[in-house]
Image (cartoon, rainbow, N blue to C red; front, side, top):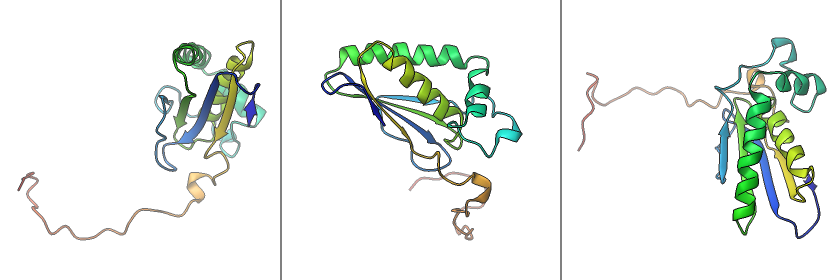
Length: 153
């Protein structure tokens, strides 16, 4: 989704899950996994696009301040750069905390700054982690050094 007018400074914001895929290569990377605890278990099947999750994340101590600080940092970068500024906000699954924080930063950037804002939620529609098939490779016997030492060749 792109919000704004053509020709204005451009801001790209992505929410993503660290457990889902590779970490995006962006100008500003925010890791929200350890800052804020997972929200209530009864909201587990919902995403950051559902109002109950939005309300829960917004009410988490520290989220409003971090959201505002991130917006101020991004605002400074936009004023310095001649190209789009790219921001990625990640949480474990990329379905709740990162989605809400990304949308909140986008709202701040749209309120009076005249930026074109593009928001992408990379992992919001992926199935919950408990229902995903395992991608772990099968264990194979280690034929190397078994005494715990690390050796170089």
